[in-house]
Length: 257
Image 1 (spheres, rainbow, N blue to C red):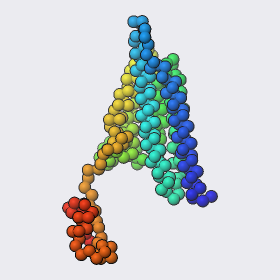
Image 2: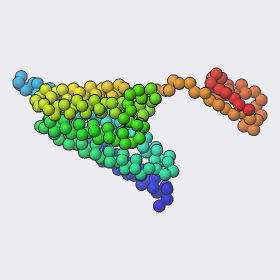
Image 3: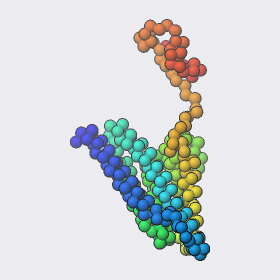
Image 4: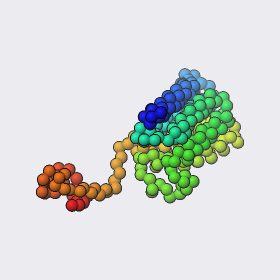
C-alpha cells in the first residue's frame, strides 16, 4: 500500500468519525429540545420545575454546541496534519476517532436522561468531561499536562495549546462540581448544574475567542533575515529598493551578503 493510499484511508477515517459524531450530537440536541419549548399556561407550584428544566436544557445544548465547535476546529488541525505528513500517525487518527464517537454517545445518553434521571445525567456529565480530559492529555498537544501551574505564558493565544490548557483546567473544575451533585437530589440540583454548564460555556468562549473565531495576531516582533546577492536581486545595487518593494519596516530587517 502506497503512502498516498494510507493517507487517504486515514482522512476517510477522520471524515467518518466526524460525521458519526455530528449525527449523534444532532440527535441528542433534538432529544433535549422539548425541555426548551415554551408553555402558555403553568401553575405556580410548577414554575420552579419549569425554569429548572429550561436552565438545564439550555446548559446541555450550549455545552454540546461549544464542544462541537471545538471539535470542528481540532478536526481541521488533525486533517491538515495528516495531509502534510509523509507518514501520518495511525495512533493519533485512531485516538481522535474513538474520542469523537465516545463523546457523541455520551452526549446522546446525557440527553436521554436529562429530564427524568438527574443523578444519572450528572454522572454522565462527569464521564463526558473525564473523556475530554483524557483525550487532551493523551493527544500530546500539551507536553507534561500534569504540570499546569505557570504554563500559560509558554503558549500563544489563539493556538490549540492555549485552548487545550484552558480546557484541562475547565474539565478539572467541572468534574469536581458535577461530581458533588451526585450526593444530592432535588430540583435545585438541576438548576445549579444547568447554571454551571451555561456559565462554563460562556467563559470558554470568552477565554478562547481567539481560537474559536480568530481575528488576533501575534504582537511579538519578528526579525526577518534576507540574504541578498546579485543573482537573486537581478543586478539591483541598492538594497533600499528591496526594502521598499517588500514594504517591511527596515528596523525589522537584517541583510547579509
